[in-house]
Length: 278
Image 1 (cartoon, rainbow, N blue to C red):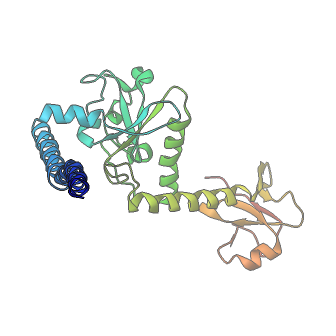
Image 2: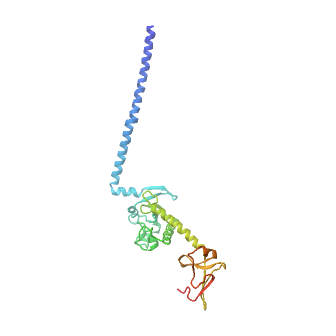
Image 3: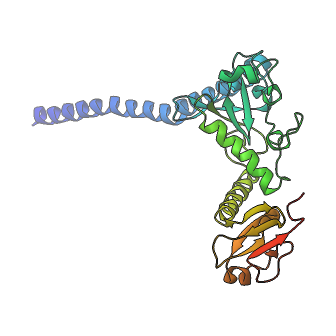
């Protein structure tokens, strides 16, 4: 009986000894998860923050890092540039071999057109800067913000944007931080407003193109003559004083249509010895 009791006590002690390492191991895991691991992450965060501060405090290093910053990959295979105005100015064919220009905040590589955009080129004033206004005004020193432009002027600028974007010789590189895009390449509220204006202006332009134009000629002894090819339409002034042909229903609905010079209300053929002389 004593031997059996002793054996039972030995087995119980062995069982207790086996549990002890497991408990110690579990305590070490707790320490690692709740003490050491947060300390490691905090140390790494401090290291990264300090490194970025030291890097950005060095102007040249910061410039290079910003200049090579990348955004989403574009169909051409490269990543989009996210440039500041200062960085864009570097790509002038002198400080950097490549030549960049910007239209409505979008940056294009025009290096292949160096004879036009390089030193001494006729379009040199467009290089390394966004001169969107100049694409319509023709003034070499004109600036970036086209918000005060008329719809016609805005369409002029947009046509240049389409030209650069669709020209195989020039490559779209990304965006420049300014009035049109932010530092992450997101469109600003102004850019969104301009997009709406451009869409509306294009629709209005298409509507004008769909209007039948008047026939005009000058005949000796008769003078200038204007008429509509369609016998059911009447000549009327519309956008910018142009002559278009409209039905009676069109005229009744559009109060902005005016009579052509020397035309009466229901004349389909207007004759004037002075019409068109200017």
